[in-house]
Image 1 (cartoon, rainbow, N blue to C red):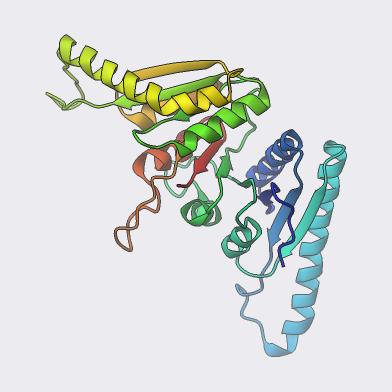
Image 2: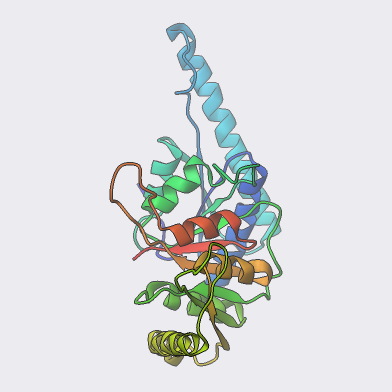
Length: 290
């Protein structure tokens, strides 16, 4: 049974380096929020086809080892983050199912680690990260391996037309951290030649004015609710994912909408822009569901 207090931060833990990085990031976030940190670690013997005579003994030993690993990680986290309440939970079902259960509605955030890059920029998120991003009903953060940028970097939010959910979350995070908010909006123009964009100056000025006006209207409620947050608005010509990734270089957090799509069995569970940002961002990325 999930007895998490409202506002808990949930993080998935395994034995990888990126998972430990995610655990540290989630602990700092929980402290910022004054929230409980719940650490979930999945264990399973399903991958091993064992003779029946050995099952009971081996399962018991494996479960004890998993429990000890989880408890040790929780205790280390308490020592590194004094005052933080840490609640470890051994996940009995699959990792994705268990983390989604732990991150029930009312939970502030679900955090996982992101795998490193490979030659072809494929399978970077991993099955657990990809699964929770596809189905989580709460904001989900993926933390890249190799550390995170300075805590005083700005929060960067990519804002698509008519999408207020990432805006409110980004303003909250910027105010909580005491850092500026950098708002990114991009727009595209039909290419005259592959790899080259030719935009008439009058058309570019008109489009940028339209995008700026629409963005100002979308930001207005959050700006009124967070008057202390300094806001830097950037409207650019080009692919949205490229603009957001470029701005992530000095960011403490990147925020995007999920843009989830369920058109057919083999479609991406999230839109193209958040999918690419998740793979390539230099900073942790928060994906906000509708």
